[in-house]
Image (cartoon, rainbow, N blue to C red):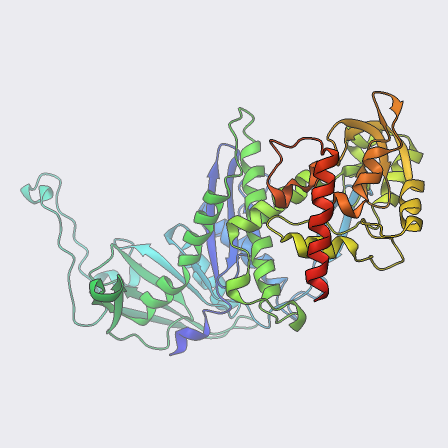
Length: 484
């Protein structure tokens, strides 16, 4: 049917209220990508004929969508505040559509001026409207009488009229100048809803049919039919995206209690950024951008796992690396000298592979024995020349961090491994015991940082000579089995 053509390129509107104001977003149906937004404030004037707030917001959102349509506004640009340059920068918008996409909205955004504007531009829209909001031209032909307030019938609930076919009204407009021809349509929502559906250029026909709904599985599965028409299915088949966005924002839980009201919209924008990032991840996993990125659906991260991974990356990131705008303004960066910042940035250009959570001991050992590209020695040094390179790379820093081997605070760091390691005990030289043991094959798995696969973080203790001997025999047996 014709309405299926709208669904892949459709848009839906999302309304957000907070103490900091009100924002209207327009999203893709298939992806949670925000294509435009309008924040309600008095600085932006209402266009002529768009007196309602919702209608004015649609006007500006359609303008933003037109900038993404090929050939409409080739010189469209967007202004962005660049933190690094400390000034506004203009970026040219790249068209991604060949025509104005279909828009799905609720009655807050539906109006004669809105439908006419979209129709004259050659676009299409489907929106709900209150059942007592009937077009003036159609009122003489429809039953729209209201019960008097003094009537005894006001206590009884009004019955919605049921008809064999949905009631449909159509009004056509001819092309005039650069304005395109279009038609307006109004369809009753039928007996299951309190609203009607109005739209522009959205329905080639309207008929009554039945769609099957089901719940449950196996012997408890039940099926039933619901009355349906094309207008109703377009709306219900696209507007579900709003519920998905609301649900994902809720489970993201990026919020906190604060009297500063402007924090609420900022946290809301962060939630939408995380949701859009997860859809980008899924789009990359689909393999359409690059076949090498394809990942089966069952092997992809869930939204919960994706957010946990983002959190770990955020907590492990050091602003001194200066990879993102605004990093140079952090106190962690400004209190360091230029040489110290350069040293940290250079030492993090090449990082060795780390042990992942739940990774088997054999795979972790082989990974630690494999050198990284660029002639960087591996962590486990079977030869003393590799150990010498590691020890020669140890530098003294101006701040302390826990030792990866024993957990005590130290000023020394192996810049090849990007790991903090002790070279003394109680300010007395001990032969760089922690640094040597960390790179020793026989001690692999005994370090404080190796709890990721041993699960011994809370009850970790320094290894004794017997522990090292037993671990050495274990490593030898494991390597012997690997060679077979």
